[in-house]
Image (tube, rainbow, N blue to C red; front, top):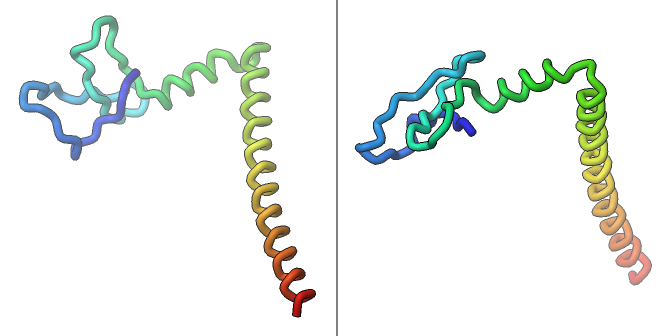
Amino acid sequence: MSQLYDPDKERPAWSSAKPIPCADCGTLLEDDWWKSGPQASVCRRCQNKRYEAKTRGTPEGERRRKRKTLLAKLKRLEDRMERDQRTHAQVCEELKSLSNS
């Protein structure tokens, strides 16, 4: 998979391959010249956009979109539950300290 080019990353002198621009957005990518097979010409974000566009309107694309939506909703609910449990514990501690006084 293509990796974004990091100019600050230290590289050995023998691997002075030039970064490749993404075909869609122009972001610089590392040149994986040591890997066999075709080289990646687009970054991961653009690959995802292409896949989304290709599957839009298909049952698989709708299922994938629905799943992403539900996973995001689940994450928000779990975060809210965790925050509320911490608040609940704090309130219980305050009540205990007030009843012991």
